[in-house]
Image 1: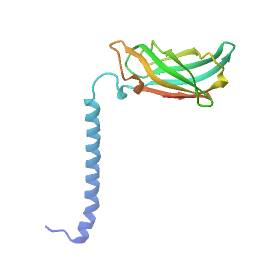
Image 2 (image 1 turned 90 degrees about the vertical axis):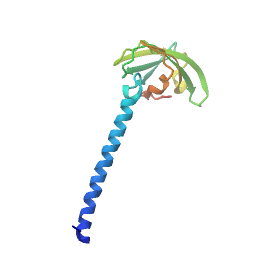
Image 3 (image 1 turned 135 degrees about the horizontal axis):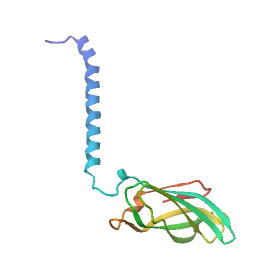
Image 4 (image 1 turned 180 degrees about the horizontal axis):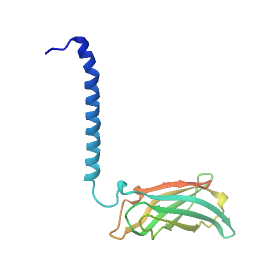
Length: 160
C-alpha cells in the first residue's frame, strides 16, 4: 500500500520522534557501559574530596587558615599532603607549605587549622599546586590532585 504525499508528511514527524528516542536510548546505554567498564577503585564516579577555605583568622602568631575537608569517596586516606602555594595580593609567591589533611575516612568531614606565619591581609590567594603524598588504606595513589574540588568562603580564593 502506498501512502499519499499528505499522509507521508503526517508520518514523517512520527518517524523523527521515534529515531530521536532511539538515539537517546543508545546514548544512555553507551554512557552506562563506559561508566561500568571503568576500572574499579577511586574514580570520579566514586566521588571527590571537597576542600573549602572556610576562614582566615588574624592572630599575633600570624594568619590561621581553616580548611574544611569532606571525603565523598570510599577511600580511607591515611596520607594526604597538599603542596600549598601562598600568593600575596600583588600576585607574587610568598611561600610554599606542605599541609596534611589526613587522616580522612570515607564520608567524613574534618577541619584542619594551619598557621601560615604571615599577616592575613598579605594573602591574595592560595593554590593547591600538587598532592605530594596520597595513600589510602589499600595503596599509594598518584592521581589525587584530579579528585580534589576547591571552594572558599573566605575573602581569599582557594584554587588548584
